[in-house]
Image (cartoon, rainbow, N blue to C red; front, side):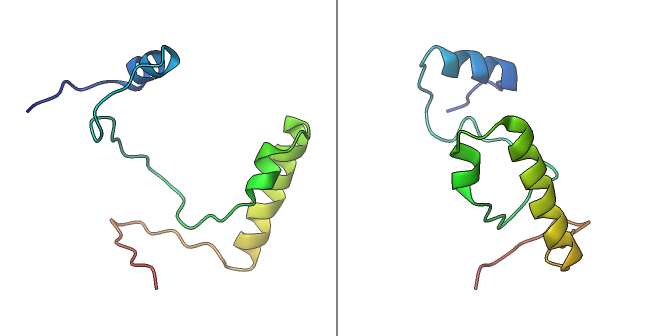
Length: 82
């Protein structure tokens, strides 16, 4: 079975209408992407202002970069969890 290619705008419109699509046909790649981010979800769902959340995220990322807890892979990478 062959499914049509759907752009992101179409997917957003379908989702906004509550449409359901077969599994797997909405797959797309995101580049660059972050793996094993482990950011505290309670920070995202808190009632704090967006400006606070953005500043907290920036600080959180900068701390990890400073501690060399972030690696950039310039080539295609396969990461197998331990």
